[in-house]
Every structure is written in structure tokens, then in C-alpha cells.
Image (cartoon, rainbow, N blue to C red):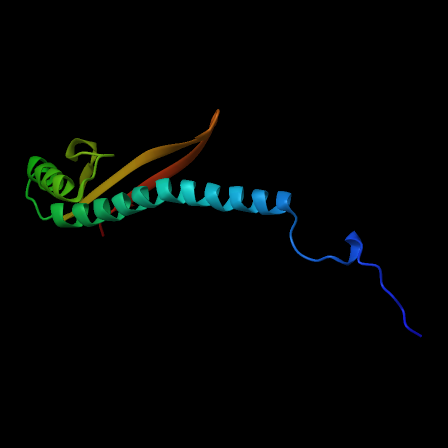
Length: 120
């Protein structure tokens, strides 16, 4: 018994051209959004390090100036020294910040990222 299986569409395997195009569009979209998100994360980490270094100042103005110097070096543009919340808890200085970054995706759609941190 020699059975001949017809080589029709039902026996082919693999991706169709449409599937390949959609998969490529998805990968490109993730890459484009990621390329916009990663710099905001790097800036956030730099801002956290900057407030840790800045809290060694004795006055509010010194802390703000120290942060601004670090911000100039680390290219922090989302916040400045004047945006910092500086308070004392007993004998300990606590420096904190909070800000929002919006990344335009398409049309009316935005990716909203909320960042906040404070020193220990």
C-alpha cells in the first residue's frame, strides 16, 4: 500500500508572510518604546545617587547646589535642586523627589512613568 499524501496547504509548516510582518512590527515597537524608557530609568538611578551625595550639605541651599552639580555631570534634566523635598527627621536630613515622565506612543496614547526616591 503506497499512500500518496497530497502536498496541499494543510501539510505545510511555518509562518505566513502576514505573521512574519506582524511579528516584525511587534519586535520593532517593543524596541522603540524600550529605547525611550531605558534613558528615563538611567536618569532616575543617577538622581537617586545625586540625592545621596547631596544630603551631606548643611543647609537647604548647599544640598540644592550639590544636587545641581551632580545633575550637570550626570545629565539629569527632569528635576533640579529646587524640586527636592528637604526635611529633617530628628538629627537626620532626608532628601526626596518625585516626578512624572510621559512617553508619547501613538495618537493620544502615552506611557506614564512615575519616579520617586528618598535618602535613608
